[in-house]
Image 1 (cartoon, helix red, strand yellow):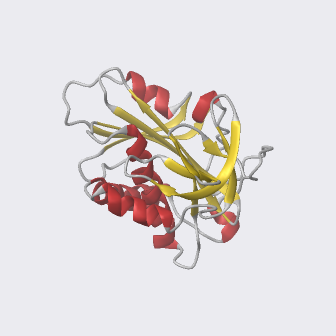
Image 2: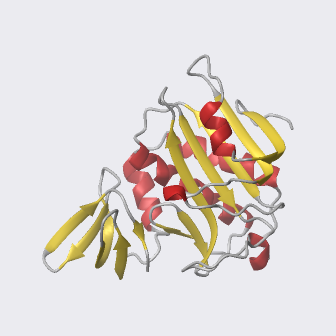
Amino acid sequence: MADIGKWQWHDYDVLDSTNDLALSYPVYNNDVHIIFTALSQTKGRGRIGRRWFSPRGNLYMSQLFFSSLPSNQMVYVVALSIVQTIKKFSPDSYPQIKWPNDILLNNHKVCGILIEKRSDDAYVIGIGLNLTQTPQIETVYPAASLRDFAIDISRREFISTYISLFEKNLMRPFAEIIDDFLSCAYRLRQTIDVNLPKEKISGQFIGIDENGFLLLKQGQDVITINTGEILS
């Protein structure tokens, strides 16, 4: 595969996990910009050790690079860039970001994000996007592919457009990223259930603060949440 801008593109037929390869790949300087992709994965991973089903025909991609942006802000840059990419190819669609790392279309999950850091502080950003195949799995939010919604994007088209948008968003003030995120945030200003590491809580989703923490209103109190996920 040809590289994309300054990003070296390493494409494989089958891998255990693109993120696992990126986590172990030797790096000799901080100028590294590498994209790893596979046509399928045998041990794809999502957040919290969940299995990511990886049928052939979808996009399984990991970025390896260095950045000073904190992890709790990086996820917004990545998620927004994915949403913007989908809209480039389907302007009438309305992809939404379910905090913190899922992309939904019509209440169907089409994409997940896994952000990890290496011991040398390099970022490894995994993206699993259902381009053409719908994984047969039981989840709260049913899976779907972009093709299910008549959106046809090749892997190269998606990667090239996404990388261009990602690089631009990475340079923008974080306040602007949050403004754009909120314009497509799933269930903003609604009562939601949030799964925390040790409990589940409910409240009104009122926004994101300057650090990237979710703001949940309970009565007169506002709770800031760094780690968790919206359940419903």
